[in-house]
Image (cartoon, rainbow, N blue to C red; front, side, top):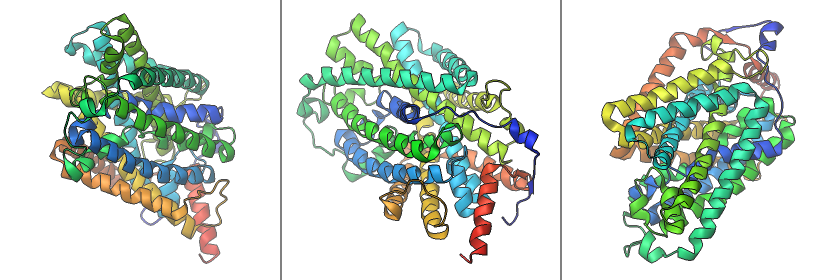
Length: 478
């Protein structure tokens, strides 16, 4: 705890910052799947351009191993440290305030820029459905933010109910697509176009990794639901692992079938509405395809809604502990939702998308934001997996309602694969705009902590738990 200072708050202050418990396993499953399902509707297809059909499919295999290791580790840590801070609280307990803050900052970047990426995709679908000009896109983005931030402010009960129904609708749309695409599959003609399976070799696999991550990115938000879950020890592990199993099926089926039917992998590699292209092939360019494209928006909306929920809780937790400005932790008096965190996070995400679009990069807004989100995510993954290993070794007496069968080996595998993806982001010049944007985000955040926040931390639940665990370990001579 060297170099940081804490202040305490009375019970009345914390009483105004208590979230309402509502979630059970079905809600957590829907939130986990819903947070990610947009990856099946938009974003993954850029991986065809980066590595070709085979490059993306191999990258998906690698990334699936990463998320298996990550998810089992989170299933252990979440009920053991059941706080709204999620990744930040894991790293804080394992490695101290600075590591906790950096992990939280990385995850914050992921959760701010992921919905910003998704809303660009939603704007693409809505523009195609309603025939609006490209210049209208920022208005679609703004409308989406207003509606779904409003739903999240309204209450946790509504947030989870909306997420369950939208997620089920999104999965139904994917099931219709899979059933319609299967009879039309021709891998040689449409996926490979007569070329090799790996047209860009191993470098193409590396280049496709960030886009492969996009079909899983967001499942790690479930630990943020801990303070709103009735029984974290039982429900969180089940919710995380059921969501993972669902996503593994979708993550392979969507790219494989999309690339193997007309217009083919090469044609949809740069599309902002790749599933709409598939529906046009299956049903023709008629009202049915437009109707299904409208329903396809449910996938984007499910993730958009779920990750707005996530950044609200994440900002709330870090501000309740003093790492972010304290005023952001205030919650709605009757709804018990983190209203200020939700509004400020939306303003930052929308502003970032608007700045990139206004700078003349409108065709690359989604890709730039996607890579900034992935950059933050993989850094947070590395820190979380290192935290898992340290918690297992240094603090073995922490009560663990669930223990990962993969143990330290699973966490180490996820950490290594996350680091490989991080290197790929740095090496590819096409991703550097996103990487530089992320670097600026980190620089500003670290300067804020070192120059201001580290002397104004608050003994919130995450901090009090970490200090108690450290004290017990020291007393036991560990």
